[in-house]
Length: 257
Length: 340
Image (cartoon, rainbow over all chains, first blue to last red; front, side, top):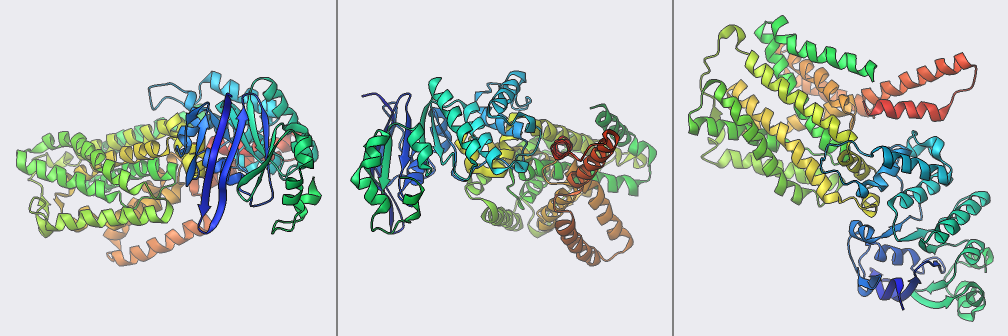
């Protein structure tokens, strides 16, 4: 039916390592989809292929039924896919507010290239969103002075300024304290209620199981299971991928499933 | 705002009055060379400082501007102040050369980019050596200029002054514009910026082309003022190193830093050249200065000074209030200053 984001048999190899082999996923309009899998199973690679940071060797990516395979990052963004990175990527030597203005820069329609960046409305909107994620008091500080958790929030806020149709979040809860995890989860739910679609890569199983539906499981670059959390949780293939005799870190399994 | 406006107005007034107060031609000659480097450093910084792509090939534009002005003056038989009207054309030529140069060089980043700019630079220098139109090794001589001796330097001075001020103003406008924001985002994390819709190639190329224009213009002016360009003086690799040092000393990526750097280094160089005679000694000192700047003032004078002033103000404020030092406040002060 009408999925918003779909990949079809995407494969990608780095040298001799087959990071993705025929990965097919589908995210419906208005879903909070989860993408899990052991370390090295290809989750981030799949994100990179979708958002244009890596080229697929074969396979297709569709947004709203339109093929966008291997489009460069700026074009993928323009089409409505925003993303965050596993290790947050903000602009450290710019202020928090300037970070927000950069994320909203594509909306400025001024013909004059020397016009001042960020009109009053853009600045107010940026401040509102900073307030929404709770770091408005740092607006004038350099982004490099933020703590790790605050950087996560800043990255979330500026992906929101950009206002994409679908947000790809790479480990939004990674390395973040439990109370901040709850804040991030509730923000995602609120935004989803307002109509945003999400695809989330995350290792924190409580976070994923509580938030995402459906959940897709990637192992050795292939989707081995997908469906609602309770089904995926008890799928023998999934248990095997996490607990099994493979080369994957056993810590993974103790952490969650 | 007001505290910033007063010193800028004073500096501009000083610049306008300078040749009327200091009528000694030796002094105004040094001032003209200094203004040429102010324009160059400000233009270079608008590309390299804002985007983080360090170019050591901007002498390509300088030399091209010089040669273009020389060839056009010779072939069109221009004299006197007519030659100044060639400078906008020289700037245009610089911009046009920057388009293929940029498309070629800006595909790569960091060290590779630096190396490519140097390679392109040598291609231009060797071409100037070998073409008939550029006069080969002997270069191009300017016609005798019949300006009144007492005020001979003044037209050169004011043309250089206008180019320098115009470049700094545009550089400032760019820094606070969306274009400037995009450039600085590219400096911090180009791939991330692309993921937020910044058309990185177009933005980098735009800045590169802009930065070539004033450099080519002062190249033309420099030819007319020194009356001679040859391949080793027009395409001088030390110019680019000097400009990079000026920007690093004053504060790479700030508006006023490269201007300050040029105002310090170029007069110092000229003083050495004239009074210590041995320019080799100067190059040694130059190298030493570069090391000191990188080690002691990695961010340059302007950002470091702004931070100290900001901290000092915070301390005073917190002493008054009797509260502890507030880190958020201090960094907010820094940023405001750093854009100065």
